[in-house]
Length: 431
Image 1 (tube, rainbow, N blue to C red):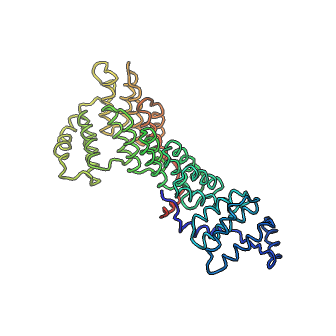
Image 2 (tube, helix red, strand yellow; image 1 turned 60 degrees about the vertical axis):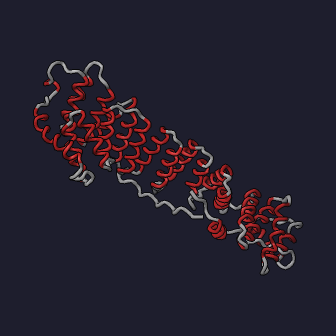
C-alpha cells in the first residue's frame, strides 16, 4: 500500500487550509487583534516581530529566505499559541517552496501545540501519519493514522494505510484485528466495505503463514462477497489447514459445486475421479455434464471417454439395484453401509432418500455423527430446504466444523435480503 505522494500531500495540505497569521506589530495592529479574537490565539510580544519578519520574507520573490527564520522559531521553547503559529508558518512556507520536510515539522508543531482546530485535527493527523509512513516510521504512522481515523477521517486510503502500518512491522495478528475493526465500522455505515479491502486482508493473512488466519479471512471474503473465486479461495484455505480423508474431500467438492467454485477442468477431474472411486456413478455423470455445459470440460477431454462414458453405462443398472428405503437393506446394515447408500442416492438427486439413509446410519451403533449430519445438510441444501439444512450443519463438530460453518454462511447468503451496495474503493495513490 503506497502512501500519499509528497506532491499530492502538498496539494491536499493546501486544501486543508492553515491559519492566515497576521502579526505585523504596527501596520496591521487592528487586523491582528481581530484575527486573534476570531481564532482565540494570542501571539506573545516576543514572537510578534519574528512572525512579521518571516511573513515579510515569504512575500518576496525569494521566499526561501524565510526558511532559516522559521526553523529558528520552531527551535525555540514556545507557548502553545506561539507554537501553533510557528507550525502554521512552517506549513505555509513548506508548501510555497515545496519543502515537505518543513511541512512535516509544521504539522507536528501545530499538533503538539494543542491549539489545532477541531476541523483541522483529522487531516493534520492523517498527513503527519503519511509523512511517517513514507519515512518507514511505522509505529509513529500508526499512532497518527489511528488518531485521524478516530476523529472520522476517511479520505486518502487511510483504512488500508492504518492496517498496513502493522503489517510493515510483521504484526500480522494485530493488523488483522485492525482490519476487522475497520471493516465492521464500514459495514455499519450505509454502504459496505469494498471487496478490495477483504482481498487485501486475506492476502496479509496468507502472508502470515498462519493457516488458521488464512482460513478465517478467506471465509470472511466469501461471506461478504460470495463468488466462485471467493468461495474457491475459502475452500482452498480450509483444505490447507485440515487433514481430510476421501469422504471429507468429496464433501468439500460438493460444497464447491453448490457455490460455483468448480472453476477449472482440474476441479471437475478431481470431483469425478473421487466419485468414481466410490462407484457414485450418478454423481460422476452429474458433475461432468455440468462441466461440459459450462464449457470447462471440453468434448475432447480424456475425462469424457475414460470417466463419463463408463459411468453413463452403469447408471441404469446401478440405480435399479438400489434399495429405496433403509428397511430394504439386506441384513441389519451397518452405519457406514447406510451412509454409503445415502451417498449414492445423493448423486442421483434422490435427496429425500439420501436423508432417510443418513438418518438410518446415525441410528446405528458406532455412527460417525458428523459425517451423517454433514450428509443430511448437503442433501437438504441441494433439495432447496435451506432451513432444515442449516439445522443439520449446526450439529456438525470436529474437523468438519469449518466446512459446516461455510455451508451455513452460504445458506444465509441465499436467504438474506439484498445487501447495501458497496462503496467503490478509493484509487490507490501513487508516489
